[in-house]
Length: 257
Ligand code: MG
Image (cartoon, rainbow, N blue to C red; front, side, top):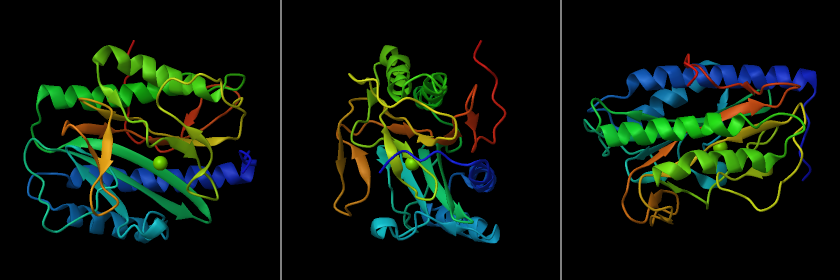
């Protein structure tokens, strides 16, 4: 499948799809607290998506049984919500979700601290987020796709964290997963040239320990092999003539320098 270039009309629909998803995440962030179950987070997210008149695109995707992926501590991604999994003070929880608005998909993820978390956990969350911004600093026309990958890798390397390799970012639009794949680790080849109108989900998944992951017996939940904690940060972005537009960003973010 070729990389799709969105028309101006499609871009408007992508913007709206992403804006609504970001709105859902803003509410979910406020709901994360000690004592809430991962199923309660899923139900809330599902309701918020449908209240916007949208469809949760993760539900039933390849058979996934929920609308929100809720992954706790050493769970990297694709955690299945459960009423028996209660968030505890000091946990970190990664929420990953998307929706469909008028046929157009959005996709984003955040890792939140539950109550007071350790400085080490906070550092992991911050580095994962900042690696995204390092990556999309290269997301400009004329550059090549893998400059994003290389920049994420270069940002993470000094921390000694493991970058997950089995799961990567992706193009997005009329489908949740479109070409191209967007790896989060250094690439030998340059990859395709970036062009205005491309929409990409860029999503570093970073482990405090080693990069290796494995799948639980539920065939969904990805966990770190060494049991170290993992963070995830994802936005859907639009390649423009200049700086990329971050379509799912809802937080005000202070530039680093
Ligand atoms: Mg994604």
